[in-house]
Image (cartoon, rainbow, N blue to C red; front, side, top):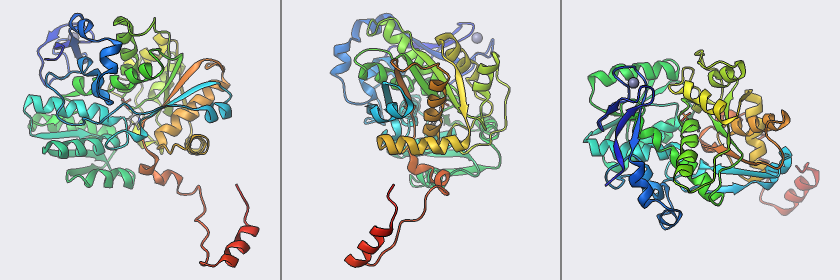
Amino acid sequence: MGYVKGLICKECKREYAKEPIHVCEYCFGPLEINYDYEGIKKVVTKKSIESGPPSMWRYQALLPIDEDPKVGLNTGFTPLVRAKNLGKALGINNLYIKNDSVNHPTFSFKDRVVAVAVSKAIEFGFDTISCASTGNLANSVAAHAAEAGLKSVIFIPDGLEAGKILGTLIYGTQLIAVKGSYDDVNRLCSEIAVNHKWAFVNINIRPYYGDGSKSYGYEIAEQLGWKTPDNVVVPVAGSSLITKIWKAFHEFEMLGLVDKVQSKIFAAQATGCSPVTTAIKNGSENITPVKPNTIAKSIAIGNPADGYYGIKTANTSGGYGEDVSDEEVVESMKLLAETEGIFTETAGGVTVGVTKKLIEQGRIKPDETTVICITGNGLKTQEALADSFDAPAVIDPNINKFEDYFANSVTV
Ligand SMILES: *Cc1c(COP(=O)(O)O)cnc(C)c1O
Ligand SMILES: [Zn+2]
């Protein structure tokens, strides 16, 4: 039914069967999906996509499952918001927000990758879903495992935000906090994967999982009227999303759905965890791992799995990498909320803050079409704003008390 021939090594191009594996046995390169693009070309047109469901599954022929999706049928096709007010504040004229802070069902772009990963895990016959997560993946894996009626065992670094923890536990999962950073959690999970035959969405199912992110890129192009933008500013953790947006644009070009892709892809990180943007700035092709220290916990990966490819995407597209301080993250979360009425989490503060910097540096020009990726919801990272606002005024239910208060209050 689907258009997946098998897996293929991104480096040496050796081919593998469709299995829950992710590393080439010969060169240790990452495995990717090997699509039957000739078959896809025969069925995928603008019309076929436009007549599909208002979800990421309108691109099902380009996603790596063989049967119809088993979970997440309502995921994706989030708004592409024309951000005139924020554009004005930043001094540019053609700004858009791709708003996955309202993605179904757990309010981050991770619902796209997990909808694919869990559907594929069911095809493979797994009964337990697992992952190492910086927070949003945990929420999404727990929710989709619940929807599928499967068990889940989820690993996070200790010290995550309360919203991310409760937003995982609510689905009736087994949640384990590991003392250390995400990179420690991920290393532990690789060892656990040897002993337990579980579907680890970002380890043995990673080739399938990663391609769920392509739908974010397809939607940007379709929602711009079958055009790719001049600039995309992408938050970077493991570097999966940034490479898949690029891949999505190029697949659309190959299928004749958009003109030649000339988009510049910009990597955005928090200064307290910026292995990818630091490498780009230094002109280096390789990552020097760091120990994360930032409030942008959802993108705090010090040793990113696809970091090398993230750097390559920014460089070959003609983009760049920038990072912002935690103070700039908070300022940018407020700016987006005050100008567009969109409450994003810390990772969205990173992309808005980095966009501001790139405009100031002249790397993003005023009349170019620019898309800022907003990938998560602000209600999950309230700690970041703990010192930002006074408590609301408390008054008696009395008109005179209100008028007294209002006359003496300072309006914002
Ligand atoms: C995971 C995550 C990212 C980045 O994901 P990668 O594909 O690992 O680079 C960006 N934003 C948010 C909110 C995330 O949770
Ligand atoms: Zn190989």
